[in-house]
Length: 486
Image (cartoon, rainbow, N blue to C red; front, side, top):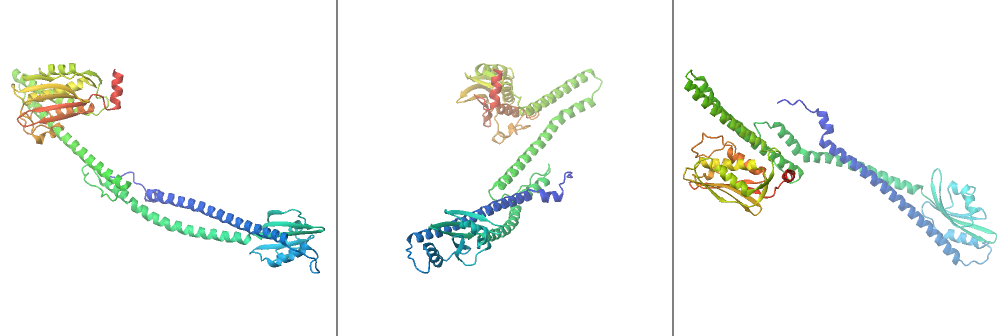
């Protein structure tokens, strides 16, 4: 069979499951890497700001402690206490990298460490003039075109002398270090994404290989060849899908086998009466008596064909939801009615063994049809002196309806097979009668009621067929129909 819906190769490459898995994997990796890098950068900046803040606070704390403890005496070198404090503190403290200690005295820079200051802290800069006017402690940051400065200022006023101690920190180099770290992380992340994507592509191919094998197997399967199966590896979802696919193939193979047998058996059953009818019609003469006999024979064969077709339609309809016409049935009256109808089938020793006193929800006509089929079947395998007994009983939550006979019985090898379509007992003396659909119909009726058929039989000791039906309908649809019917 030619495939008319072939998918282009480029489409399979760019839109295959393997490609979609890889694309989503790369997208998730990139998103997680981007978020992680932003989080790391933010964390490093926070740590940097905290470290700078701690360093500045420590310098101010040391300056205040030194100012409170200094013992100043007038001498020729220092004009006042403020110059003495500035001189001693600057000489004793070494600033950290990118940190500046600046002292201003009466509007002018007095001493600084280091001595070389950036342009924004030099003598005539706007920032130096601003610091010189401070009269209260201040902490802030200043953003310049090239740098960000974080500072703390501590004024000291003594009489006419106005001093200001300033500790400032440049963040340019530390920001550059943070950026270098982030760039390094980005490069490593890109390399990891590329390598992991290649590995993911290979792994995805290996994981999805059973699906490709599944596809090839499905393409190679035809109606006449359903014997192929896929080897199961592992115990994951793919393995479960493989097991399910193999089980589906087995079910399809069984279904096609049943279909072939059904068609062959149906064709055989229909071919025989057609052959008989054609043969007699071809040999039909002018004799009125011969014509009458031929018409009777043809009519009988047509009736048999009609019954056969009706049985086939019944089996097909048994699978439909409207097969049953449900109502509440009184089992005692139904059992007696079945017994009365069965006695008219043939001359036998008919007996009514037991009558149940209960109610069920069921289809009276279908149950009657099932019991009559069993009774008719019993008459075909018994003699006039044999017993055929009917009965009903409620056992726990099940209704048992049975037909028992003392006929020739059914061999053990045939007991499972006789419920199949077109099956007959291998030792039957009446293999030419019927099409072997009666017991299939009985089973279909029992199963449609949520029940089953049980057979107990021994060769030359008779058989007992029992319909076992739940007293309460097991399916929701059966309950709803019975409520509507009531």
